[in-house]
Image (tube, rainbow, N blue to C red; front, top):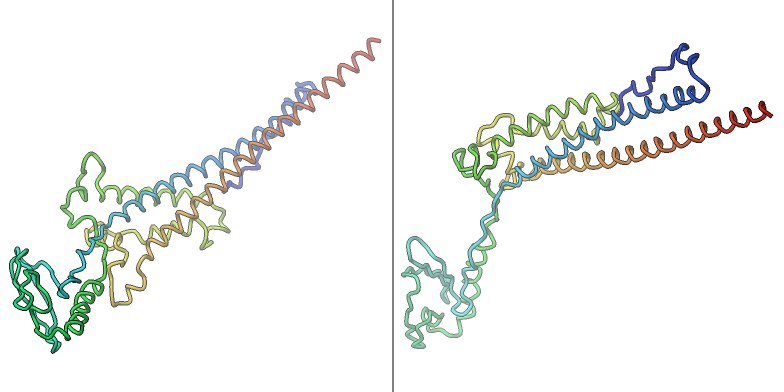
Length: 314
């Protein structure tokens, strides 16, 4: 991620060299070179870390926007195991009762909710199969097809997610809600910020690595290209839904593709961020070792000079 000019260190001039003692020369040349070289490298890493962290924040924000979906749970299973009938509420305060008789004829009865009907065979106020057929031996054969009607209706319907906002005028979509930024303004801001980070990352990435399909730059470009091309409600809704509510078409096979690309980019950003943090720790270690070696050299020089002075004076 470092720029090519990281190794361009300004050397000491001859005038500077002539004006200093040996100890000062060590400080000037040896330590100064370390400061320049490591300082530039740390500066480049700091820029790269800032870009990567900003990218992670943007991708996380986009992920939160894509999570703005709801799922409507199913109502209770409509089969009454005690009576062998299908019960479900219909328009108004009415209930619909479905059963299959011994001749496999489907019967549908409507009556107000919570209405009790007297069974003429048993005298019970509960609806039973005997109410619909005097043939007690046929109740099992009637029970099974009635259950199949309920099961087919209940399990045959897919559970589809839907966009959390019903329209462009829904509260919180285009207008702020409870002090938080609106969904639409957040999406626009993230798209604009991602474009800027891609530009910054392009400058920081060596040219040989810019086309790496598994690199962060390539994955970010793919995510950016998949963001809504315009901010019409239908376009934004399609981006959020990601074909999860599509059935019986070729588009159903690509359900979750946008989510996968977003996850891949976020994983790449986090991986690069960890790598950069490790490089920072390595540079700090080198920085410490370099200064310790410079201190050791200066200490040795001082001891040599003192020893020479003692020899001269003796």
